[in-house]
Figure 1 (cartoon, rainbow, N blue to C red):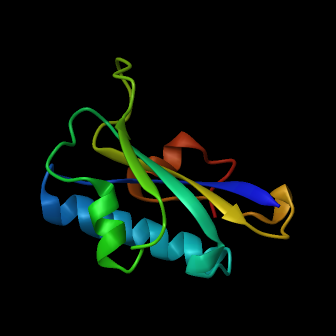
Figure 2 (cartoon, rainbow, N blue to C red):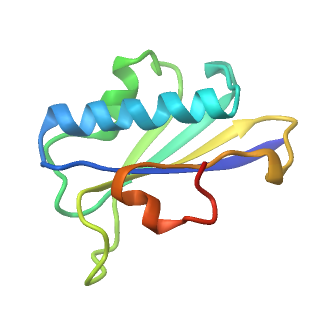
Length: 119
């Protein structure tokens, strides 16, 4: 079965280092919280808010070994008042877990996005 796992994290600055490190932190925690192997991940869709353009989150994923996972990056809709400096991910994973057993990961200021889903 394929399930979706959501994650989001914020950064303080629009830099390559912060975007890549935050992406890696978020992905590593999603893997840990859901007891996943890299082979379980079908694909990942990353979005960033329009104020983040120094790097692709996919580059951070590739740097930690996600070289065979299909990855795509997009820009979020620029809704006025939306949380700034935010990286989001939707992972599609192969798992036997139920929706209720999935752990979504929201870190730093992104916790406010979905407090009902956060670990």
